[in-house]
Image 1 (cartoon, rainbow, N blue to C red):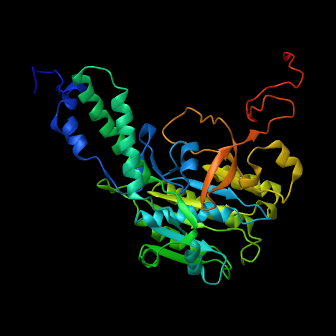
Image 2: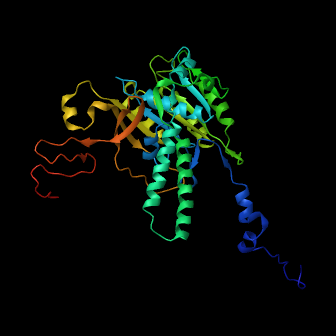
Image 3: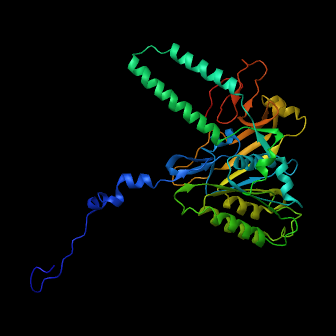
Amino acid sequence: MATGAGQPLKTTRPSSFSRASSPSFSPSSSSSASPSLAPGVRIGANGAAFVSSGIPDLDRILGGGFLVGSVVMVMEDGNAPHHLLLLRNFMSQGIVHGQSVLFAGPTTEPRFFLGTLPSPVVQKEGVKIMHDTSDVQDKEKGLRIAWQYKKYFGEQNTVDSHNRDKKQEFSSDFDLRKPLERHLLNSQNIECISTLDAIDLTKLQNHCSTFVSKLSRKDAVNLNAGRIAIQSLCAPQCGYFEKDWDILSFIRSLRAMVRSSNAVAVITFPASVLSNSISKRWQHLADTLLSVRAIPDEDKDLAKLLTGYQDMVGFLHVHKVAQFNSQVPVILDASTFSLKLQKRRSLVLERLNQAPVEGSSGVSYGTSGSCSSSTGSPLDF
């Protein structure tokens, strides 16, 4: 609107406060558009979405599990197939949650690998009910406050029990001795690809692209997740084994596809068959980097050094932890953990503890971050 001759036309623009008060920026409208989480997906700190690794202890160590949109790499041990324990639990967790799973391995019939996936441990309802009842009785016995606070405590306990049940649904304990039920393996959400006779990675890349396209992040209504499991990507029996740069190009492409989707990719590879420079490039492309190592049979020196040596099956080392939406580095209490079989069926991770030395009080000390002297004299820095 002109105010006079020769004066420029002035237009009024709404301020940021007026834009914030408009219906399109109202809190109610933003909350109504929030995505609904599918089973097996959990929102952690800074709005990052997680899926379970299939090992509850590993989820706790990594701060919630595997980040959606990340690439996880596991360096194999050439003397033992311990990496398959992580890969099987990762796939089983996704199948139990009804998530889409894509598996690729250097085998003639990759679908036979599904027969080795473990089944979740079934808890007895009677034992669980008795345990919950005893906990409630103990809390009521120790509660000596006014009745209005008791009501608040009861509501808080209900919320805690709901969160605990939700956590159990997110991550399951798997029985390595019991295979997964057959009706779960017949799902249409499971794809298997053989990389044994492939002369290049074009077929695998096309399958990954098609798989990831179904899990676009543009769908803000239902936040579902998918899992890509690739076993021994640079195995010597594959036709593309000596094409190091082609494999690196595939990893970069897969990382870009996964980053813009609701998928998680886990890749295992034998680092011993790669050159040092190529192996470092692989590790640099990983968002989360793990390595597994078997324990030598009857290592008497190691048995004297560590407690619980007879129950260990290997070691797991955490080299790098994925991190999105944050600039604060992840600092772990320990980076090396022992792989154990609980009751000879479920995988658990424990920090390494030093065995008590002869003549000591018998107290075990953590090997990480512990500073002690055999003579008891103060340390000089």
